[in-house]
Image 1 (tube, rainbow, N blue to C red):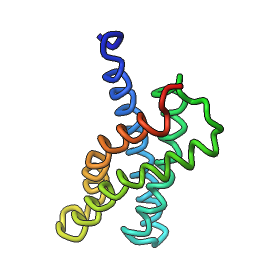
Image 2 (cartoon, helix red, strand yellow):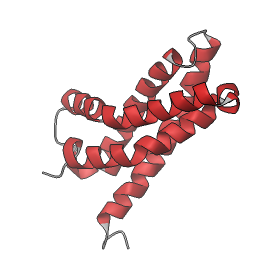
Image 3 (cartoon, one colour):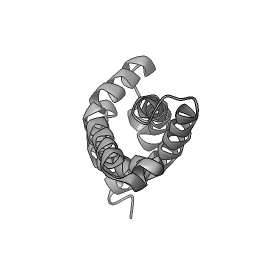
Image 4 (tube, rainbow, N blue to C red):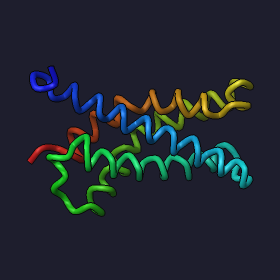
Length: 134
């Protein structure tokens, strides 16, 4: 089926990579909270850690045939262009932390909701602009 619809295979791999990113995002956020960074500043650090991991995994696996640009330039494009998805991700997270005591007490719920909010945007941007086929 993936041979017939290669974009579906890419999207599923992107989802697996996103799950790994979610785990790193959450772990770093909780570490930053433990260090006293707060839920908003801690999330900036955790997002950057997750973005770096997902870039590397997407470059090596999800879009492996389109990883021809220099790594530093492609990482910069990935982070810059995925700021649109980050805005949806972080906006969802921040709104839920501010508006729900349950999410404020359990930030992982906001991280999960934010990750889903940004996923489709990030996939489209990554596929079209960062890891486009040669």
